[in-house]
Image (cartoon, rainbow, N blue to C red; front, side, top):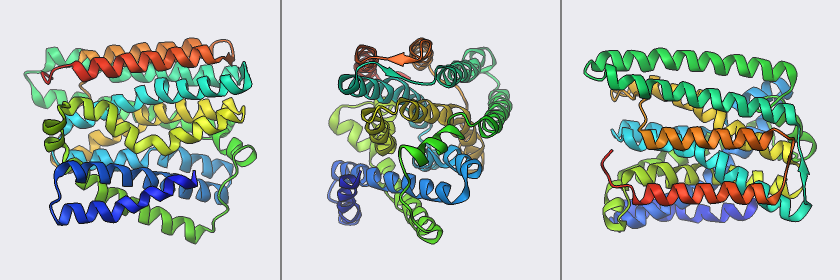
Length: 354
């Protein structure tokens, strides 16, 4: 993962591009590339803190800060009033983890190691909860069409749903910590055995964490500010940028870790990263953003379009089927990647009618 840190050179370039007005396309590209290593360092700092605090508190840190980069980017986007971009990135992160990350991990790990085994009960539990999370996120979208004329009731419904979703997440974290199952318990334990932490001191970890958060916030401001001009110049819709590009930018470092541990035949950890990250987005990031949006004066509702809902439900069901037998092979990974590719193409050609 150290080679990713070379991308930090794009941080000062992005700052210069913004200050000297080199063009929105250059600002977008350089800030996006700079976010990748910053997100990676944020993850390493979180892992270092988890290493020092023990498995229970460490697991809670991993569960809470696992998608901090994505959270920062979306908060900046909410502040800029780009709510459709935010909602698309929520769904895109779920799809990316279930289809792209899990698919790449199973494919590459399977090509090297053959049929790979994993804990069927833990993976099945995560997959079941993922289906539940997708259904819960979908309910406001279906019912809001009938409630829609009353904007206040739509917002109140999203707030009430967010409270319920967070309650599910808290219960899941408690259960995970007590029973050492992913993402809070097992991921922390596996990280110590098969994927050791960086061995940093608490002071260094906190310093890196703070610097990474500030750096991601600055780069996210540049990124979001240049989205509109980039969509016009490249022919992308804002929806495509949100559902495909932004999730990859914010999570690529974590994605690479999942693939690396799959190559080492540690499929429990690999699947825990992919499924755990999806659960964090659906059960933690999404409802938190609803409350944050109120503070920023741009209320965000849990109302997704039919294309997002169908794609997410299909992806969660596919993940559940793969988890049933407790083993995976490269063909299953290839199928997940094909589905993701088809969805990406569909979203690319989808006109900006949303």
